Image (cartoon, rainbow, N blue to C red; front, side, top):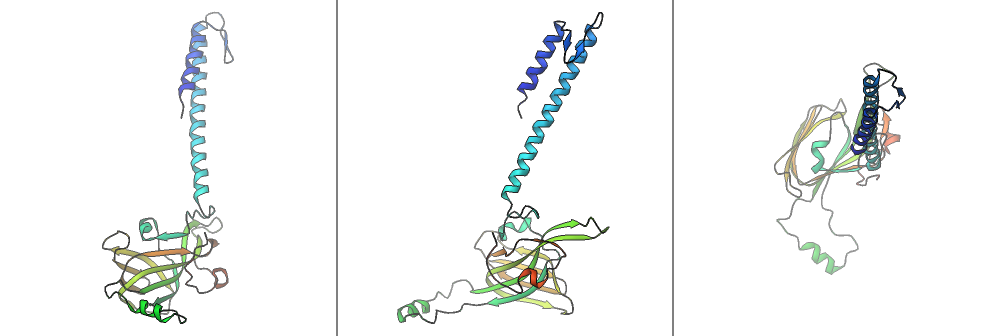
Length: 249
């Protein structure tokens, strides 16, 4: 913000008032009113300075909001990006995210059309290599919560179908207390080193369901743009059950 023009205007108006200018900023000084005229001129100049300062701050705020819109992949919901990792854990919320399905996949072996030489390379595996297990969740990720303008106390949501993928998974344990209610997430906690590519302990807390395991990293792929409405998406709106590891943007 540049205050130099404001100071210059104040000095110019003040000099004009001290010289006895009779018509500065619309204030006319008559006989015996020189002091009152100067005060009025200076007050008008200060009001102009305040307006200039407010205008400058408004330009800053508009510029910042424009930059935010440009960096969002879905400005309506405020979604800043479609691919998230465990490095973003502190900025993510899992409360009430609905889990529709989960899967554990393993190393599938060499392709069926591999040559004998390629098969030899596939057989030469490192026993100390990380686990090849992958843990996947198909869930409705809540991007933002909004108070409903139509129903007092009701909450509406910006929700998107997403695939949560944990790599190099090992030591999976947990408990499933009931299947009578949907699997709603509550928290996802990490223990151990936060550095990328390092094995960490994970604790996934849900309603009637807890899961503990070790894994190296996770990636959340937001598969479709968020929709405004209920907390849980209809199957037709989310493309059914999917573990596709591809983000929409």
